[in-house]
Length: 385
Ligand code: SF4
Image (cartoon, rainbow, N blue to C red; front, side, top):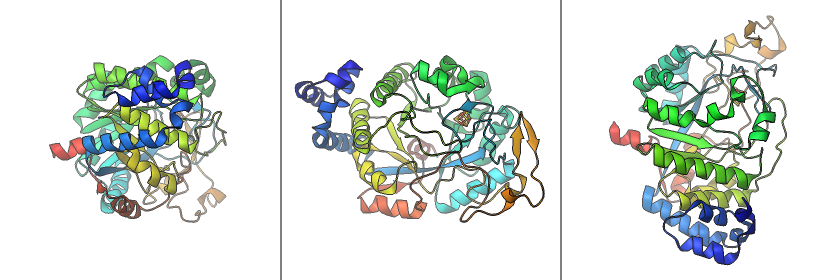
């Protein structure tokens, strides 16, 4: 951490000339001194990315199947104490959403759910994956952490990737952010990727949610975690996401700030440190910034995203309700919550507000304009299907 603040121009130059970087080099590249050499760093990052991945940007879409949750995470709209409009989609409703995404072009879907064993059981997730996999070649999950044996049927049903963000690697801040529910257990979450690997997942996604702890501290921890996974889970592809906090229900304000220029520096530093890692950028970031970051080292982006269950087609909107202590509280007939909100297919509450609301087609067109080919399938999945 100290190195990432104190590195001088010579140390940055030395790290830039290496082909294999250490964590110390990574710390040098995210230092204030390295910010002075951002152009040089980004040229190198761009070159390495094109050598390893070609001029290709892969697209994926999140498919939220439930916004029920038993955890309280101070920064998340789905927290159990938030009086939001909740719903869990049936398998048919999940398929309806997936078919809409397929029609838009997507062949790579990230299935997302809050953590609630009553509404989002392991069997439910397995059945969602089985139904999706029949039509979509690449299905990943971002759901509450499980035991290895609980993951196995989900892998057998066709899921190939698991995403789990540590949110923050600072234990003290983690404790204050996670006030109720199983997510309070820092170590259980930290070891999730290894359990997923043991169950057979072959794409492991990690990341920190920038805006909770010092960004340089988080970045070094993410890099150390990725480095560990590359050595211990060597058959898996590692992807790293760089989400910054967005406004959500509960109106949590970020505790720390990661500026746009620092985010660009971070993308490049991760690329130089991990030439083969997937780097993910979501619609949390505004269009103009995404367009600028894509050529620097990003390999995977979402587009046209909705963070509310049923957001693509309105599936499940007639079932929306409140949940109190695990019990469904029906809305009164004629309640104001039923009133359609402008431009939304459902009134179910989203996890956070997206910043890039361009359609998938518009994003694909932009990728072409930047000189890249938009690819709708996952790279590994494309080779296997
Ligand atoms: S971050 Fe995840 S676990 Fe926490 S409240 Fe939101 S959905 Fe639930």
